Amino acid sequence: MKRLAELIACVLIGKCEGGDKFNMNAIYILWLRELKRYFRSRSRMIGSLGQPLLFLIALGFGLGPVFQRAGQGNYFQFLAPGVISMSILFMSIFAGIQVIWDRQFGFLKETLVAPVSRLSIMLGKTLGGATIAVIQGIFVFILALIVGFRPDLNLLPLALLFMIMIAVFFTAVGITIASLLEDMNGFQVIMNFIVQPLFFLSGALFPLNSAPAFLKIITSFDPLTYGVDGLRACLAKTNQYPVTLDLIILLVLIGVIMTIGSYFFSRIEI
Amino acid sequence: MENDYSIDVENLVKKFDNFTAVDNISFKVKKGEIFAFLGPNGAGKSTTIKMLTTLLSPTSGKLIINGNDAVSQQEKTRESFGIVFQDPSLDDELTAYENMQFHAVLYSIKKELWKKRIEELLRFVELWERKDHLVKTFSGGMKRRLEIARGLLHHPKIFFLDEPTSGLDPQTRNHIWSYIRDLSKKEGITIFFTTHYMEEAQESADRIAIMDHGKIVSTGTVEQLLQQTKQTSLEQAFLSLTGNAIRDEEASGIDRLRTHRQMRGGR
Ligand SMILES: Nc1ncnc2c1ncn2[C@@H]1O[C@H](COP(=O)(O)OP(=O)(O)O)[C@@H](O)[C@H]1O
Ligand SMILES: [Mg+2]
Image (cartoon, rainbow over all chains, first blue to last red; front, side):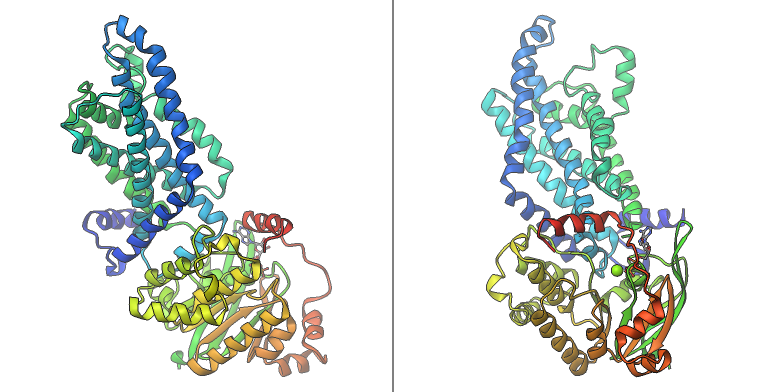
């Protein structure tokens, strides 16, 4: 408990045990490494555009007319922010989970014996993973534009902020999960029992206002709901919750997960 | 007096659940000494090194590294040593130079300094021509040389080497050992290493500890060990202290992965 309190102080004030502050250079080089690895694997970049494209085309065009007839407006406009959020979610979790690869292939040891606080390492990795996820989200955004998405561009900076918050939150979730796992065996379980539900129960695909009450309650416990809602408010001008509420909830969640995550990350042993 | 020792270990114990991997060991290593840590597979050598290098927390015992407590003063301890792990620890998707650069920044070395040192070290391990190649294209021996160069980049006071020469050809082993001996003599760096090659310990080590089943069964110079066991070679002394039974190494996830890669032609 005492350690947890120290870590909260650490995240909030940037002052850690032993008087150690954030090591900016270390955070930078860890961030840079994630980016280099990402840009070097073209297949990963291109491969992860396939699924969002399928969703946009199959669901966007397939369900569009039904949606229209139900008086809900243009489904494609509605869906695109959801699919952008989805791609950020998957990319973020995946980037976080890469810590397990680092552990299996041994590189994590090199980072963990360095004279750098675990919090700095966790931050560098989170920012690196989140940056990749946001870049991926922007690619999907452009893809959606090409396929026919016509967003409102006035609130683009705020939309970007929501994308960043989704990315930071879920990368930290990925790293936290990775800190608790020894190897990739649990990966499939995580995808099926955490990531897929997070996506399907977020209101990314269907409007919450017409959903049955029990579903609405479930979605309100899904962090992605607020990311999708905020992004949709900015780009498609429809939302379920006030944008400020989305913003505050995401910020609080980021604070909580960073605290929990750096606690578990600091306890990793090889 | 404390200050004459680089490593001071007292009553160190490490238990994994109810299996005792390191069973109440104590030893001291003097500054500038070359110290060999020998023992059959599964003796607990790597586990001991992981505790000395702050990667594992001990179940109980005292661990002083360069005057810092390795449990309560982790970051100070980490600044003062370099390490070559038994398992690979490079980023395969980065180049040799990028791996070195990453290390330099993590250890807060100044840019003018690391530029010079990286070139020096990469030239020494004969990888300078390959500095911009991705590590995944390297052979096992090249990766090992790169890890050694990297471990020395921040001029550590203690250099831990866990089976640094396993899988290398005799030329490379000789080359690396003469460099390490030189370094220890010139810069007063303490060397703590494990190996299965008895001749490496015989040639290079000032003192040797022999470990078996988590316990240190004997410590001393080569002569002392030979006298104690009344044998004529270190290999015979080693076998008489640890017995002839073949040890099964219980493979961890990493070990399994390594064996898998070995079978496919990697290190
Ligand atoms: N993380 C771990 N969990 C459980 N047992 C372990 C772990 N790490 C090592 N061991 C066990 O501890 C013993 C000592 O291992 P190790 O220190 O790697 O031996 P050595 O390096 O001398 O070959 C072995 O029996 C090994 O299986
Ligand atoms: Mg070992």
